[in-house]
Image: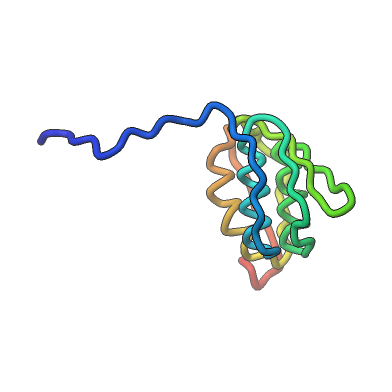
Length: 122
């Protein structure tokens, strides 16, 4: 069978942009994950502060990612895709979007990640 390339995708060198989107826990958690995987520092202005985004921030810190909350923003120090294996289990409470996103994100770590939450989440 012959391999056919449909489109070649070249990684961007550096992106400097301002992206505005509505405040939502889903968008905020996605932005936190993208910032965590990016190189350099990202500022997420006016994110939604909720239980889901709090648990995501705490989880990312356990993967070795610096996420600071300053005024109405998150300041995320990205790792360029290199994340640490958490030393402890990560509790996500009742944060469903956090659980769904972290299952994929955890697969990038070099070891085993244990996610826990409230009984109805498991």
